Length: 480
Ligand code: GLC
Image 1 (tube, rainbow, N blue to C red):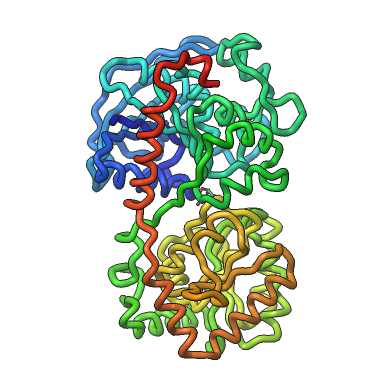
Image 2: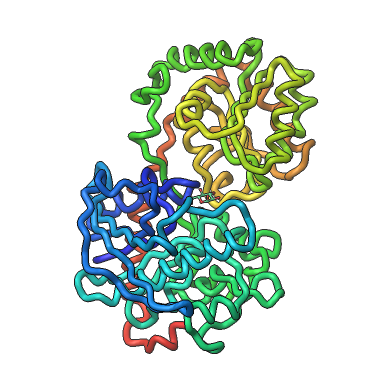
């Protein structure tokens, strides 16, 4: 079975968020499971072709409203694995600048939109080429959501939704003109009622199968609250929608062999203590009570307002707070102010992969109070590193952390997205921490949890099989 992954990001060569980690790990596990898998993505200028041993193949030609576009095609292999990688290069549309144009100006957003429209036209052209034709095109997020329509009838498609909050919205008329499509060839499927085209909405209605990255999130997006206007379309596709949990790279995230930290495992927790002391020393924190860590984007999704709202808690408890993150500038300022005001809190605004690991290793608790969370990686790393996760009961957080009130609990789970519910969760953490026996067994249990990519890959494989056997003989139109 041949599967082509189409996505905007991939760890380690083009990493922005959690999408990159999935695209950088799942294909390797699928290959182990016997799937002939390849990955296609834009060749951003930051990607070093030399390291990938990439060879140039014949170009692809596509046409957009602005004229013909010739795309250079590179084929290489994934660093450290044997997964073939196809990179599509074009100076103007695909390769120049960062992966996402974060300035947010209309020009930048349009350039980003055009980048992924050209990317998808090129992927479609690649699929049409006869060299290696995939049975299944596995599309990720809005940047690959047009592909089911573009490749309809030629290949089966699976769309994985990593985050419904990023639907890829644009003025439908402009998109049609750019793609040289007629009105009825590109229906307006809008999530906002403003006459805009939602690329993700289009993918949701046209892909053969859909999935999200946790079973709970697959349910939540059927509601107005988290469906964000796409719940109607999603409900129509309910029978084709499933939730498959992401895994975690157990080699990379392993405190016993992570060069950034003093080594330890569930049976030898001394190293964990050492990491805790190092972290406190580095940031000159008081050191008596528990250490609460946060690593992540400072955005609404990640529940940053609850973190900054916990100022009173940290002002009145013998507990330490270490925050590493960046994002929304208001939250950045608020977190900085909190850290300046409290001797037992520190904040590093930015992203630093080594410090991130040291925070996971040095923390007693890990904060992840997300407003919503399709899957989430932070809580999985925290479990591996013995930092007891404190999470809101949403999406993948709910599916991966069991509250200590239940048998075999691994973390603290709270329900309402309110300062008082979060505060109660923090109080429960302090109580748990004081009960040394119980705290230790919670840590150990968490560290022994297994969220392997092999398990996810087996589920994806079963879904691919279903996709291959379903709808045989149906005309492309019927699959709508
Ligand atoms: C998005 C989601 C996150 C998920 C990741 C990978 O970043 O916000 O919850 O873990 O995609 O699927």
